Image (cartoon, rainbow, N blue to C red):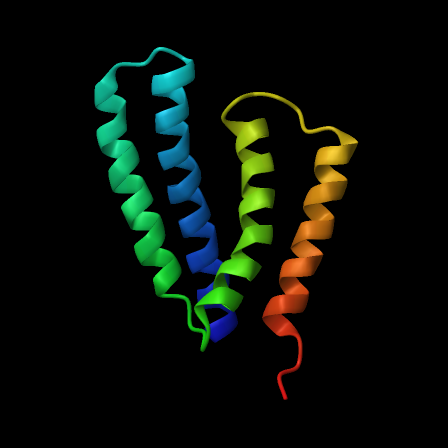
Length: 110
């Protein structure tokens, strides 16, 4: 159950972080109105709150493992939201990062 909760929190945190960052990107690079920043800030605050809920004894380990999830979620955003097909390097890099996140999350602790 703890593992499923961790996956869920990481997935929701990634969505919130990417959406929040994209709001800033859209305002700055795509000439969207400044009010796009308001939901972006809310989304980034939600991201931080969700990541803090991950059951872990160390913030740094939580953040490090989240990095791999964030990278894979960003590649999915590239494909599903931006409509750009990830190439083999995107997919290979994402797989390597996700494997690294799994080692951090599930490696034995002594």
